[in-house]
Image (cartoon, rainbow, N blue to C red; front, top):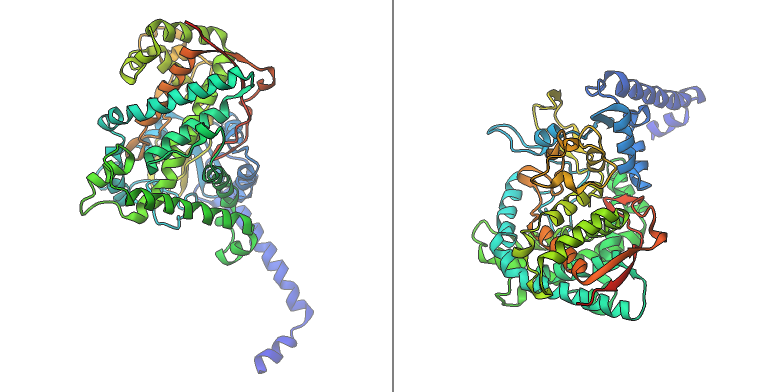
Length: 497
């Protein structure tokens, strides 16, 4: 009781020291972060250097990708965008951060402030080295060349359904929003391969409720992420809207349900889990890991592919000469629709170049995917970076940099042709283009490339495409880890042979 009574005897002068000390500490932190911090030699805007609030604001407002591009134009290949964070745009940084490390050197692990834990445990995206290698080994069987050959009939069945539904829409004189249709088909394909059944998006011409929750979950998680490192969990649970928490819980619950339903069915149909279970030995994948990875597979296998296809159509129609050249290649290569398959498409060089240039101009993940510098620090671009520094490539900035690509704001597929001898592209740094990441943690992109090629070629074989004026500037979008895409209105005219 004496201590309590003593508190009451504190004079006003003593209490005034509290804000004074707090202000002094704040000023010290600002001075330290700007002038004394181990990263103080790296350039960056002062507001970003002294606090994570600037980066949080750019993330929250969906402009992080474009802001990083502006900052790299101002400061160069490396920019400090937080007290403890550096972002790069050059090719060497790809190798240093994401590449294979020498034996005994620590790996650049995923920055756990950016990748929150899922209710089901560590998924492939955020797992440590040992768990990542084990999970990737198992999933690699599902994305192998053999698996792709066995999955091709499934892919073709959905592409043909897409063409059928687009024909029906054209006959009813509807204006076609290709953004939605690309999402419909990629979600149906990944639903079939991940859960053994489609979401019915193509058939019903609309999103399944679970698919809608995927979009909401990605954006909601991105909006909340800036507060994870700044606020204690007890306060977060109060400040995060209950609707968002409930939505995330519902999303993960549906993922678990769908995985459980698939595992309860005995089938040899070539979906992802058929290959995983076939090799699920003592170092196999647990059911909880399957549940956690189901979320990742849905996003990585659908939204990224749909975004690329939307961007591809937009840039094709913005560049009539490129569009015509691709039409000539596609329509000159096949006599009938049934001749179109993965082997035949693999022989076409210009469609590959168009897709690569689309990935460069409109990368499905436009901003950052940070890693942590390992214990003891590491060299990036030949400069020592202290351990535990958060580092990343800025995708959009890197791919739109004149230091990496000639005429970076122009859509020029010719730069990717194997026999290209155009001197404009002689200095292009192709190694800065890593659409499915780089090194031991790169994405398993075979399925994505197969989907892109089949859908694009079948679409161009069956339809003439024309722009709607309202789509001008369509690529000026916000991003929340993935693009927040606007409708892409395209006029389709069936080709009669």
